[in-house]
Length: 74
Ligand SMILES: [Zn+2]
Ligand SMILES: [Zn+2]
Image (cartoon, rainbow, N blue to C red; front, side):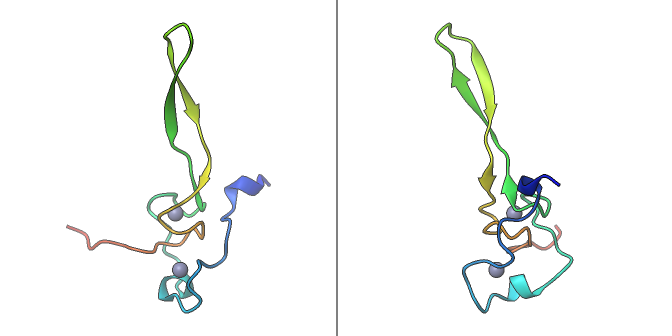
């Protein structure tokens, strides 16, 4: 299994976090993977713009893959 597909942390930095105690709600930013994969533009010497994919621990859930700030459905 690709280790980067798994959440980086089982809990966030808050030891009493109520969101981490919940199950079944995947982070809407990373779909529960705990990773955020944005693409960033990079200009080559020739002037061509290429997109580089970067992998970062998800900021929305502190890498736990669990939703930490759901908003009510509109
Ligand atoms: Zn938490
Ligand atoms: Zn997330």
